[in-house]
Each structure stands twice: as C-alpha cells, then as structure tokens.
Image (tube, rainbow, N blue to C red; front, side):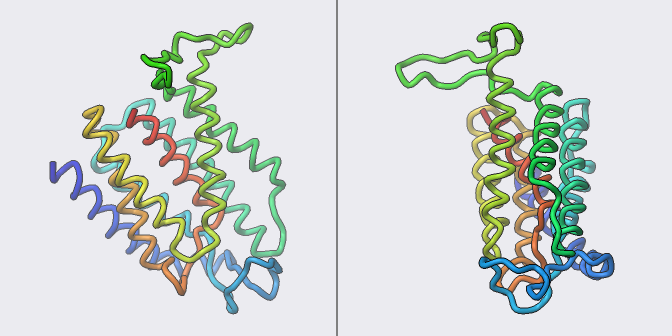
Amino acid sequence: MLIVTLLPFILSLCITAVLTWLLLPLIKKYGLIDDPKLHKHPGIIHTKPIPRGGGLPFFVGILFVSLILLPFNTQLSAIFLASAIALIVGLIDDKFNAESKDISPYIRFLVNILCATIVVGSGVSISFITNPFGGILHLDTILIPLLNIPIGDVIAGLWIIWVMNMLNWSKGVDGQMPGIVAISALVIGLLSLRFTGGVIDAQLSFIIAGSAVGFLIFNFSPAKIFPGYGATSVYLLLAVVSIFSG
C-alpha cells in the first residue's frame, strides 16, 4: 500500500518542486511573464511581473514519475500524448499572453476537442452510470444513431473538455488551482483502490496529487509562478483518472 500511495506522492512532490525551481529562470528567459503593466485585466491583483508557464514543470514532473513507476501501454501513451499537445498549445498561449495577445479561444477549444478525441480513441470511456431510478445504465451498449458511437464515449469526451476548462477558470487565485487538483487527485486515488482495485489508476492519481503539492509550494500566496494555460495538460490527466476510478 505504501508503494502505491506514498512513494508516487512523495517522489512526484519532490521532483516537481525541484523542476519548478530549476525551470523558473528558463521561463523568465523566454519571456513567459505576466506583467500587470502590459496585461490589463480587472482580475489581476499582482503588482509586479510574475512568471507564467508553470504547466511545464507541473506536467513534466507527472510524466517523469509516471515513466519510472507505471507500465506504459498504448492507452497510457495516447493519454500523455494528448496532454503533451495541450501543454505545447498552452505554453504558446502563455507566450502570446505575455505579449498582451491570445490564441483564439476557438482554436484552444478545438485543441481541447482534439485532445479529448485522442484519449477517448485510446479506449477511455464511461461504460456505465448508476440509474437514479434503480439499477445500472450501461452506456457502452447505447449507440448514437447514424454515428454508431457508444454514448459513453461522447460523455467521456465532454467530461474531459469540461474539466480542462473548469479548472482553467480556477487558477485566478494564488494556490487555488493546485490545491483543488491535489485534493481531487487524492480522493480519486483512494476511490480507485476502494472501488475498483485499480493500482495503476491509483498510482497515477497520487502522482498528480504529489505534483500539485510540489507546484503549490511556488504558487502559494504570494505566488512565485502562475500555472498558465499550459496546465490544461494536467487537468486532462485529472479528468482521465476520475473516469478510471469508476
């Protein structure tokens, strides 16, 4: 149990904290900075330039520990590929944002759809839900007319897109986003063990939680770095483990 829970958590926490510290100068060098003098927004409360692009050490910390502890297969590779795409587009947006520009929200949304499609295409789906009127609804047996696609695949895709955007809205307050991710991932990890016995699912959840706490050290008020839009890569992973937990 300690190998499944504590080892992934502590290892991910330490590696992400070290990576964030090491990458801070690099992020500053390449101009991923949120300068309140250039980026006018009523929600901005910091008074001096703060590096953004924290999604980079956040995601790399999770990936590094996952490569050490998890047995990678086609599905897990596809999931991290989708996350990497979200990270790259997010970092580009962070760079544009630092220059008082933005990638079109429509393009970002299309990228979200692409990432969700890759994940669902790898076999990640919501196969059933509890019927509020009793019994179980098997979504993998209900097909969408004409498209011949299980409705569980569509719901899984919509869930992934929703979580990616919903958590992105939560990053405006110092420490809030990594705190939400850490608590959510810990609960999901425990549920994975309790209800499904999914050791790999639980390990990935605890890796995400540890990485969130490692990043929180630098994002806690007053923040030394912001997660930026690149952190959508992590939100995608959290959405996936929530599906895995059943």
